[in-house]
Image (cartoon, helix red, strand yellow):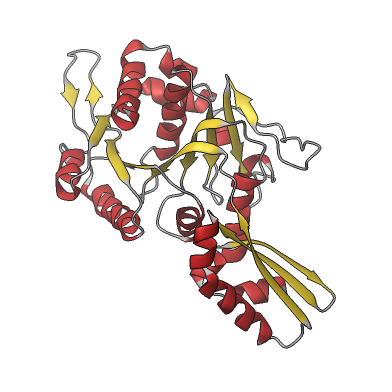
Length: 316
């Protein structure tokens, strides 16, 4: 019944849902707001909720209230790409490590519900524990806090979830995890433009969006869709990263542009956003991902400086 009720709501109303409790013929719905002022501005959604539920004609009492969101993170960085396979998750991990190296408290949330890869990239496999407040305790890699749906379910079984379940799962990773008082929460967004993006954009105050692409035209075409999605919701896009930008030959030390050249610059100019940096195609990056040890990258002076410079361009 709960899923049927949620399905009847508009997408905007779905994004505001914090909790629904059904007790016999009574239903209690909690909607989220960032402030008392916003709660007043959202009264239309409260009315919509009451009207939609009343149409089911099975409840004697309908209670719809607002709860204020408690901010757990100083700033949120969303790492996005519309094209799969461009190395977005690897970039998310290494940017998080660069932030941590600055002495900041950083959390990494794996927002890719259907294809979580953060556990592999950080060599995390143990099931998270739950504290006395029934909050999930994030796992740690060298001081970096991390959580992923891949740590909570059987990774060999496919997830076949509809929209409402997907939205509930992603917000549980945000709200029901016992994060420390973080300076930055980095979200590894799923590829594409879908329900997860909509939920996070509407329920979180995202301070920075970083778009990851490769120089290839097919990647750039999809990346444009993602940029336009964030612009539609007035989410600030802080810059673009060109990943797999070039390969440095071991024999001649020259740069070879296997996937074309200048794609990041073209996006930067087209949308008037900053080109944060270019990351090379390097075997060490692949090895660190396979071993689940990003420290291999950050012990390398050249690669470490590339990620550190991107962070400097992003937050300074």
